[in-house]
Length: 139
Image 1 (cartoon, rainbow, N blue to C red):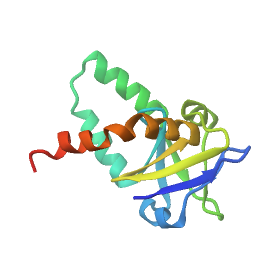
Image 2 (cartoon, rainbow, N blue to C red):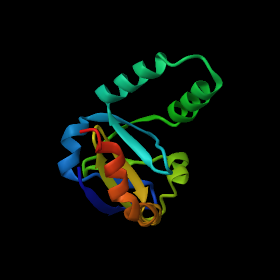
Image 3 (cartoon, one colour):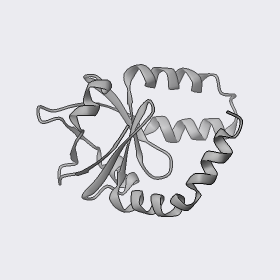
Image 4 (cartoon, rainbow, N blue to C red):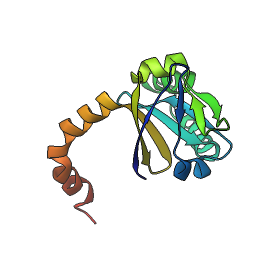
């Protein structure tokens, strides 16, 4: 959980907050996410996702989604300062240039460019109550 603001440096390194590092473990997966951000998964969660994808039917949408999602995936680890290195293709996909936002979303982290995150929040904040009503009306 949480929202953290950090910068990505010219070498593609970004600090992951110490509160979040423990749950990721020593190595983890960084890949293209949905909505123009990056997803970071602990290894055990990544294995669960890959196993679910193996059950998808062999249809064009499934093949294309797996190509998109899995081809961008890279193993990552923290350096001594708690930073991770974001590859150029992943940084380019997510529009990461300087200011970034790292958020915790259930079993994963997401890294957004500050501009995309602010745009996302602006576009969705008015609908937040409606989203909650639609998702939780049966509870």
